Image (cartoon, rainbow, N blue to C red; front, side):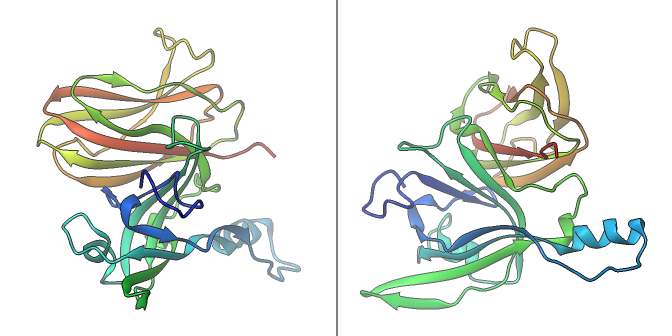
Length: 252
């Protein structure tokens, strides 16, 4: 959404499964990032490490969108829980989100979709929790940065290198292809200690999505992404519009 009186969401963007629901968004309650306590007295370190992953909780609670029954709108995307979605929320600091702005990424299960009415306007409210089907020991932090804001691409494009400093092993990224002409693309996560990206950069991972259709993908791997990180979109044919964000683990 580019305008609006809701100051919370005016400069937020929400992407769900390759669809931009920003214009339908009304509000959300909270972004979860927590770990429950459990009594593991006398248990081995191996058991403790396994349970610590199970206790981790990520989620977007109380997301509310105005009902929109167009193909790319809220109702077709949210009406039939439980459903799995790649979700990314980007938060701009006084303007539309740009590279380096905060993002929250979540391979999710949507748990609810009750419909309510306020002031004659229909609203759908949803809670999203971390999907166990997407479990990865590399994903231990949902808060990250925008790598490439929503961008229409007609040629090979390198995103801005975002300085992440030092990190622990493990990272996760999301890619949303919101418009596709049916072409062929490669979307690559690269990192560089200096930010030069002049041949010294390393490829951390490549998305499976090839730009041929509207879709979204959650990608994760084990690298220490020290230094600068960017998304590079390599064109073979066609055009597309994409958004990407990344979160990496922090050193203790």
